[in-house]
Length: 304
Image (cartoon, rainbow, N blue to C red; front, side):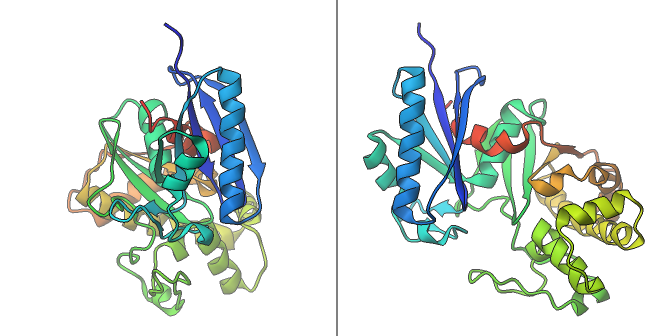
């Protein structure tokens, strides 16, 4: 019996990445292309990747896509996408016409969660909460290696929830989400995403550092960076405590650029019980195993 291959596509805001996996999850090929930030260019770039992977595998492969938004089950249109040209478009239908096969779409945070649940950091656990912390902030839930989408397809997507137990200082920061779908004060994404964290730091200290530079400052025992990361860890613990109270996952897996800050895994677990009803919490907080490949691998795993 010949091997079955699967293609995963990660549809980003500036580049589109693809991966070809065999039936055991082994990576055969991985490619990424920049594209013009418009609807047609995105479809043509996906088509190019799929065509190249089909040629390598010498078969018509299954295709799964992770997108920065959601495909409505009711209308088939994309909603809440950061890549604005996708919104209100029948992306799944148009892809199926272009690729001449069925495709599966899922939010990119869910793809990361699925990847880490199947053969990543969460593979030995039943319940996994996956978090993307990068330019934005999102999450996904998995139970027994299946994604829980919910009736509105937003289960675990906690990026635009209010920051719990805001301090006096956090209230005074007057942080408001610029997203047209949110626009609320104390939006968690504005505190937890790498972008939000860096904006708060630079506004507070009248600086112009990048996130990477602030991480380096912290490693070199800069008092400002040490303090801001301590505040950041406490904010993250408050948010995680809410999810522990609702879903009570075995493990929380971090992905995205901020997941590379090693001190988070040392400090956050001991802070979570400060904000939960149960004072002993067994939930582990782990770094992703697959790194930048998590999302694109999860997209491929949409076909099992």
